[in-house]
Length: 583
Image (cartoon, rainbow, N blue to C red; front, side, top):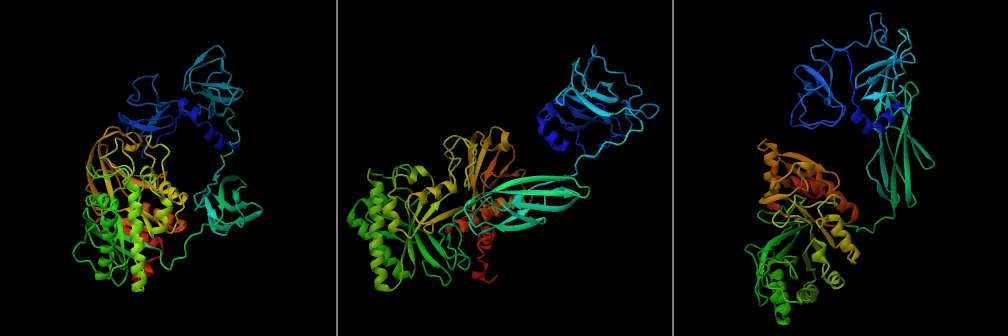
């Protein structure tokens, strides 16, 4: 084992042993001043009272130099004048003034002794432990006592680091192998992938069979030293992804206007429905030349009327008939049912009979029947979509076999998984994946929701990924542990648009620091009291790439939260969709 790797493997022991007795002139320019509130572990260095100190073990609030038995060891004076003992004696021999090791003597951290023509330093209290008897023992070899001894060979100065752009790929697809984060004076980079050998700092390869493959990188230095590192790549059968001319991108208007040149479907909000099935459309409904227009009926504040309409056959017929009439009169392309939510999941006071879920299916079926009849008469296509909550609890009661037969798209609201209005701990608004450390019962994620829908028999081309162009605000966060994430919080702030959050950061108007959860693939902001869970260009690009690779359409809520179209452009860039608006 290389000495460097050995040191890495014993880091846990080194953290409590400390280092002491260093005596060369000390450069403190890159070291921070000691802070009583900061936490330090073995090996951390700080400047205090003009002197450089190094922690021997975990410490917080212990003033350097306050006690000879404390966690801090003095390294040297920051002005270059060191009061410690020199590593070399009067005649150039580092052992000249050091006594021979005595088995009956007690040594403490920093004490030195000569044994077997070498200079040794104690890392902690010891008696009768022979220097060099064990690599795990209290003694550290400092130098040879021979003044003209040969210099010690340097540690290996090359370090191999493997990066791949994907650890799971499909048969026949390329993966990029990247060694650019390797360090040292490297002459050659050699990749071994199965029975193939490749070279170069960066290269690509592909696999023709399903399986798990080891990717081994070996780097060689100018003096012949080598190091290796490896990872694995899992190769799966290709997904049956749709062959779209354009990847569907659907935008809810919300409080803004959808740029029809940058979406395939413009979703106008919101019509309401009366108890008898009468539909009340918004003002200004019209077609657009560059995208399909869909009227969304309902929403969180407009779903009263859906349960009553759906439970009565005559009201269902009236509702579907009026939808057809609205589509024809306004020359639009479809209707979106945004009933929030079938079953006992809606706002307080929303009527919910026992057969709510079954009635929802009947309403969808009636709409499909009338839409298809009208489409045949008009020689066109009328789309029928529904907005569904992303939580598994709300998806499980639905009659997926029938709904998937009738709906063109299931637009998944894969956000608001953890609204501070309803949960007690900080968490992500719209995580792509589930962080394994989430509080119990709060493990919802985009990947989990979409996978559930596929498992119920939906085509991936029907299951729309929902993107949140806004953030949720947790206030009164009670702990800074884990940088505020998954900690108790006492309040909910007003939701913020991406535009508002971006302005705060860009104009330096906030003390919040950005953090990235690499498990969930989303960012958040935290200032010690308030945590903002949101999406930015990095997370939106990651999600859009997931949708591209897995064949899911995309929708977003809402255009009014991204007036500068920063996130929308990120979506289209990731999907290679800029060609639809000429850039």
